[in-house]
Length: 440
Image 1 (cartoon, rainbow, N blue to C red):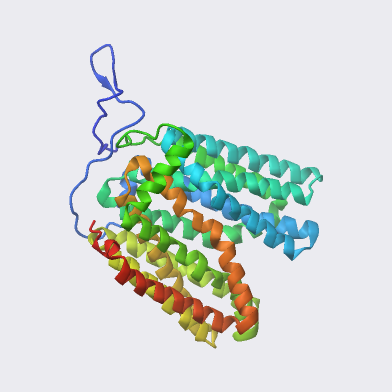
Image 2: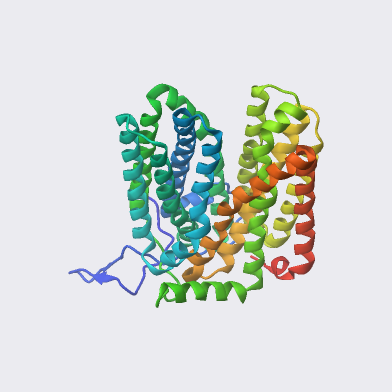
């Protein structure tokens, strides 16, 4: 039987008839275990609540990828319009841009476990309802837009909430490992999910896919029900929502390291991620390979990301000056973009893309870990919600990449984007010493 590493919470506990303390549903933060030696790739999974949170992340991400494939398939099958596909992708990103700040306030004001249960329950209902609606034959394009807005709004709250929960279920010195394992779960499902979604469409149909997604979310709901959270350090947010939002912005403005990390989080979405939308251009016009080559190119960054997250989970606890790792990973991401832009053969393109996926996930995971270590629990939801705004800005990056490609071509566009990423890393190295001084 697993031994808990947490101390009983004194406040809020009850005493039974025999005078024995009864633990409440909320526990205090797990005690640090001190420095460890050797490789501890899955050490965070020793904590029961994190284990359930991680399993939930796995099923959640799997369901999300299945949904993304199915929505695109249904929209195009229904309308034959590639324009509507792009519009739907933009609609799915907008809630992260406009609702995230409010969602962050809610995360800091209410019981986080109950909020997560409520969000997961709503996603179960909407997925099953959409599956039944598709099967009814009454589906119209606007129904898909409404469904996209509802689910994306839930995700705009779900993402910062899940990130805020990580620091409540693992000790401080294992945060790097926990964040890396979360990234590992996401990237594994990023590889498996789209292929599984396509297979399920052929096997059970589009309506069946939504039902499968709903059942995946039921598994998430069950896992969330087993989580026991640490007590939040400090007083929960009080007063009006606006006052709480202003408090969050004031904290960020007064914390140079946090502000620099949030600005740095925008780099992948605006300057690096658009390379994904240009893959078909490279496949057809630059590398002259068939659709199987495109599939390999799309899979390569995921392979690099999985390998990197396992390495990060294994050795990140030994690295104390994470700011240097962040800046090096940012510069390496830009260099890999430049190298990919100059390739003319598929094997070298694959090498550059594997490196790009690995360094990008190293960059993202290190950024997230540093924020988790710096930001107080009572402000974590608000800060994480602003971190997630980068999802809402990703269509802007894709649009910029498309316009530049029309003007100067795909290779020159990616070379320029890579150079901008490298320049950003150099500027942040000299202009934001607070980031380099963060020691964990």
